[in-house]
Image (cartoon, helix red, strand yellow):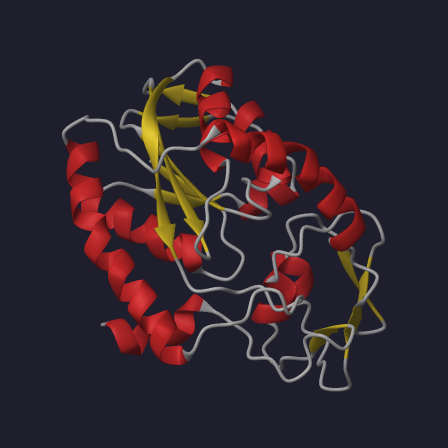
Length: 257
């Protein structure tokens, strides 16, 4: 069974294609995460965990969920990571999840996907053509990965050096605390009060009050789900997101099929 979380569609794009290639089921973990639902997920086929990379790691909320949800049946677990170009130390967390679940770690591989993070100027968005090419490259990389999973063989990713871990591990919590804040999110007059932003927030950090979203001041992971999924593009983060294209993987469906 393929389990995944996806804010703007990159990870879902990979997860569903892997599930189709394996003739297996896929399960979006968003509702379970929002509802703190750790009840049993059973699969007789290997589990394939598809996860995005945020700040060089698997998002902490997803990491904690995958460590504690009850996975039963198979003893094999694979990991697929999606990122804008660098998967950081994500593989270390995959191994930890496998150990916590007492399952056989069958390897990790990563896919370079379009960038979606518009709440900073440090990661410029790619052109439409570059996004299409990354998606096509990912599609071409899938068959050998799917074949190895079918054959029960391990998959491989790049080697993670010790110095990467030593730099990233202490840096990430500081970055999250200082930079990944929700106090700059707001909706413009284009907002229609549909509530989709609240539905896609993994932290339940958005409430609709007087037909407008209000962000809590506690948890946020800057997944860009609220910004990118707004049908009116009516959500901004301070001044930095103004005029920037909102990325949704589904927008590229006609370009790659």
